[in-house]
Length: 152
Image 1 (cartoon, helix red, strand yellow):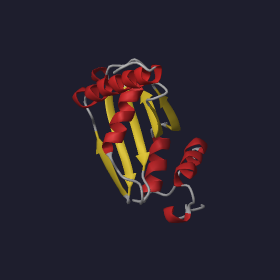
Image 2 (tube, rainbow, N blue to C red; image 1 turned 60 degrees about the vertical axis):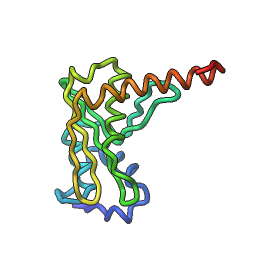
Image 3 (cartoon, helix red, strand yellow; image 1 turned 30 degrees about the vertical axis):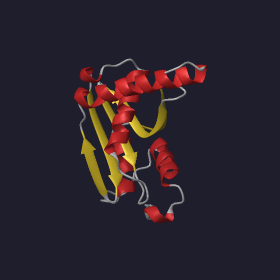
Image 4 (cartoon, rainbow, N blue to C red; image 1 turned 90 degrees about the horizontal axis):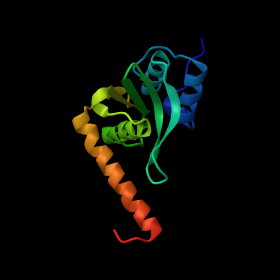
């Protein structure tokens, strides 16, 4: 069995993880964030590096995502130098709902951040996601008006 290099030895952990997930290449069970992230993404049949596009002003790329049986799962891998803000994943939840015209109250959501050999888990509700959806819609409207030269 070939073992994964330490995360610090991999030049681009996100690209490495995405290739591993697509290939279905699991790694030894450990507390290593990279191994856990890859193995969980494979176990949950997630798709890596998916763009969530709402408009030219509001979009993002999730590290790994799956939506099955009204259960949205978004996972993020964070290296030592990347911040671990769960709110970023809430924005991705909102973008997903906007893109697919889904009401957050109609689904369950689980977000995970893998960093420093730990897994942070959140289960946001519609009370968390609905205000973000409204903010995205408003900011998108303002950006469109500014682009058209209208007064806000």
